[in-house]
Structure formats: structure tokens, C-alpha cells
Amino acid sequence: MMRRLALAVLLAGALGAGTAFAYSDPSEVLPNPAEEARAEAIGRQLRCLVCQNESIEQSDAGLARDLRAIIRRKVAKGESDKVIIGWMVARYGNFIRLDPPFDAMTFALWGAPFIALGIGAGVVVLARRRGPTPAPAPLDPDEQARLSRLLEP
Image (cartoon, rainbow, N blue to C red):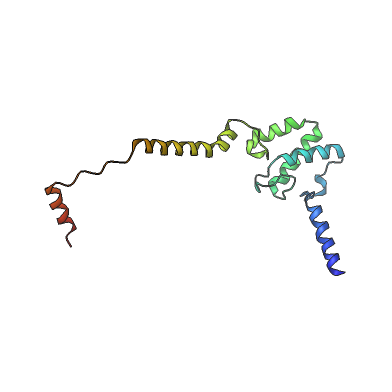
């Protein structure tokens, strides 16, 4: 019986953990449910700059709390989602987006490994075309004598 109860508690906790938000203060929640839902949707699109692998809605970091408050103020003022996210991107760069748009910078980021592999393959092909390096010329008698003197104990 205790095992089943413990399992039920763990399962309930695991299911609820995915929807938990990191409100540290109930006053963060907007009184209008539609505005609150919009603010949460915006916050789920933005990266916590402290945690970096969580949205600002999931993070309990101080900066995430401040960003949530800014989003809620802007939503309450009636600003559009695009304007709010644009303000965040202008202030913190595209890094703040959990899913950044495809542009030249993200292409360079994702394409760099393939470019490096291409350059490496080109170097290998060019090295094989040149063939083996020729053996060095044998030492003349003066060089041989000098080498022998240098190698003496």
C-alpha cells in the first residue's frame, strides 16, 4: 500500500513538474487571464540569460523574474507580442530567443562544422595529388663529419 502511495505521489509530481512556472511572487500574475496567457506564451519563447537552458517562465533566477515583470507590464500596456519580443531582442540580441530565426549568423553557426570538414577534405585531396615527398638528398662528406661530431658523447 505504501509503495503505491509513494508511486502515486512521484507520478503526480512528475506530471505537474512540466507545467510549473517559477513565480516567486503571486503579484507577478496578471489579473486578466487572457493577458496572463499571452505573457506566459511570450516568456516561454525567451531564454533565461542566467540558466541558458530554460525559458524565463521556468527559471527562478533574479534576471528572469525581472524580465517576466517587464513582459507583463508591456502586455498590460497593450503592446503586441512582436513588439515585446523585438524589444527583448534589441536589448539582449537573438541569443535571448530559445528558437532564433534562420539568418546569416545561425547559418554560420550550423554550417561551420560542414565548412571545416570541407576544408579538411580539400587539404587531404591536395596532399594526395602532390604525391609522396621526395627523399632528402644524401649528406655530403663535410655534413656527415659535422653530424658525427655533434652526436659524439
